[in-house]
Length: 90
Image (cartoon, rainbow, N blue to C red; front, top):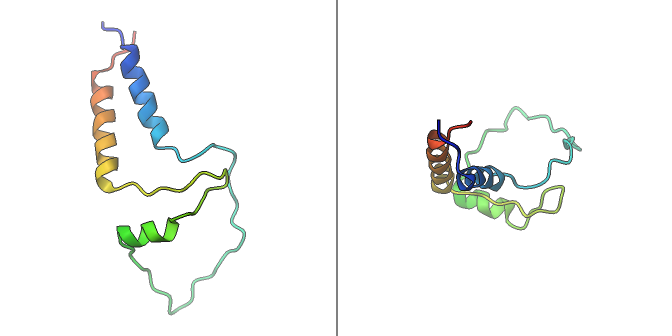
């Protein structure tokens, strides 16, 4: 049985933490609930539109919101899967 190298464990932990945008200080409750109107239609936003919408916004802890590209998410997932597939625990 192999031991998990400390660097591998740290890398997996770093990847997991990189996905977090802020602290876990409880759940936020919505301040206003909107009822959809009959004429409202769902809109699909492009990546650029989403970036414009969240530009400069912050979460409840004051951390800037970020939008990661699909390529960045896929790359992080591939690295995490590689690290997890090679890890063994004693």
